[in-house]
Image (cartoon, rainbow, N blue to C red; front, side, top):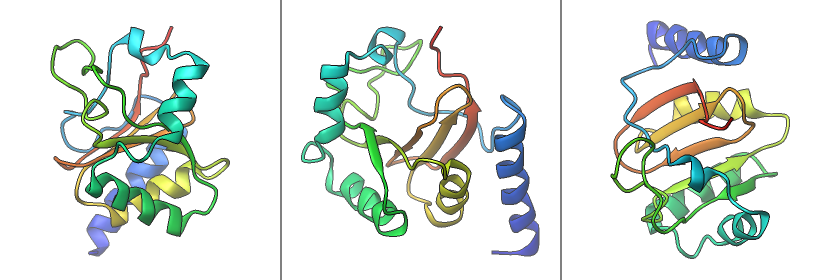
Length: 151
């Protein structure tokens, strides 16, 4: 990584951890989903959080890389059939098993820095009012400190 790109990554991470809604690297074309889908019951959250068999092989490989780097990975959500991108009727990456929401307690900024530096095959997104990180396969984007849409 060049000196200039190191500075850009550091700037993104610093902004993400200090100024909510300040940063977005690349235009956002990420994977939000409707508010009704966000308000998952704890039963539904457990079933989607525990289920990695529904993920595509590429998504499982991403999760394996994250788990090998950070031991304490708590999966929040994986597959949600019927989930759509917020404000659209377009299917979410969660609907097709191509996205994972997870947290690594107490290490969110460290995990985001690592993902930005080491993950180029999909999207990385965080929310300023939630403690989890979203990763998906496909188009590369980084969207830090997005609003979650929860009220």
